[in-house]
Length: 297
Image (tube, rainbow, N blue to C red; front, side, top):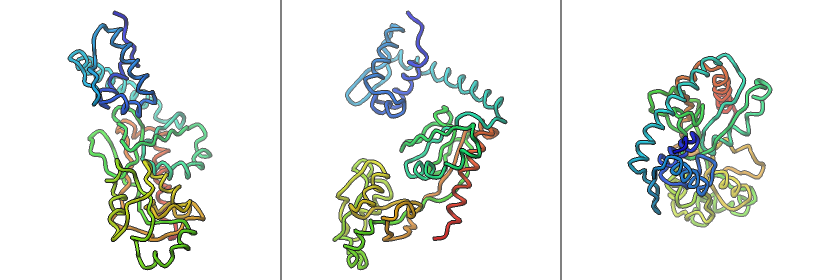
């Protein structure tokens, strides 16, 4: 039996946690075929079958369960070592800070983070955009920015702002349908929303609930796709209100939909609260939200 490759062991853990190779591919950046091959290599090196593979997903064997238990312990040890390094480098504002957030907040950050480079030229930022929150305890990210307060005991969190939504359209579309929009004749208008797997998002439920409104004729798997469709005249869509000034082509139909307001929470593992590099990022992000609140309507 050969020595097991630590990266292959971590891949096994990610596949077991995700349940399928396809879902694990979203978190690893590797293709499902590559993940499957790496598990094959691991099973061959250990001389044990670790996963039962079905069309519906992957289930660990008894040997796989034992391996996952040991890997979890090894992971926790590695995290403690990394936290020890964080404590050693607590005063340094150099390195990389990894932020996990959803797509609206990702757009908000990437379009406003340029001044940070002048303040901290030795700090690099990675913004990882996912609907599924990454684990801060497992060091998948340093900071999470999400529309809910995390309930894990080992995390510290602060509310940094509120994400608000409105109904928007393209200005040319507004001119062509001015009378219908003014009358609230929603049945006569076109809409852009999320695709079926995301139809239960709060914004999409509100859109589909407009009195007499039709289901979106253009459906996207991501919010920025809705933004692109709206500014190019495909119809009306629910967008985050901070996008109001992003394009001269954007026009407001309903400026604020209060029932869609979401608190925005910034969280980190408690072991990082003394890190200067993480603190620099969290304070900058908090300042961005302060600036957004201070903007005139």
